Amino acid sequence: MTNDEHTTPLAIEQLRDGISALMQTVTSLLDDEATLATLETALHSHDALSDQLASYTLDSSAADALQRIEHFITLQAGQYYQAYEATLQGQENNRFIPLFARQLLALEGIGPATARQLFQSGIFTPEALYALTPQALEALELPPSMLARLLSLRY
Image (cartoon, rainbow, N blue to C red):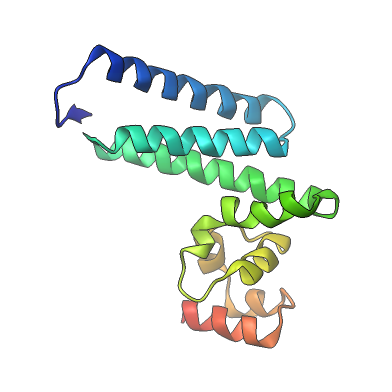
């Protein structure tokens, strides 16, 4: 990582704090059963560190590491969603998909309803969606219009 601007001791301390916060939450996800609060904290820590690092020129390994961490958080959130969807209360349920399905939501043609159905089916990332064969996608028993839209994204 190279710095595009003069690095101050305060900036270095803030980066250290951001890295530490992200390490703590990811470690918690690895060591303990995921909770909604831990997942949210992990994602917010990831986003805060990404924002801090935006002023730096990152080498590809640092950018890849941040992407892998976000992928890990998304997978953990997807598994949590499948296990606890029925117990998520109104506001928790309403903010879950916009927070944790943002990679799917970034695809043209996928909105919150489609992302929710994909999460319910165990599809949490674009890579998982694109890895499905047309037959596997049809087996998800999605509404016909949603299935047609997803098939058009892929082929």
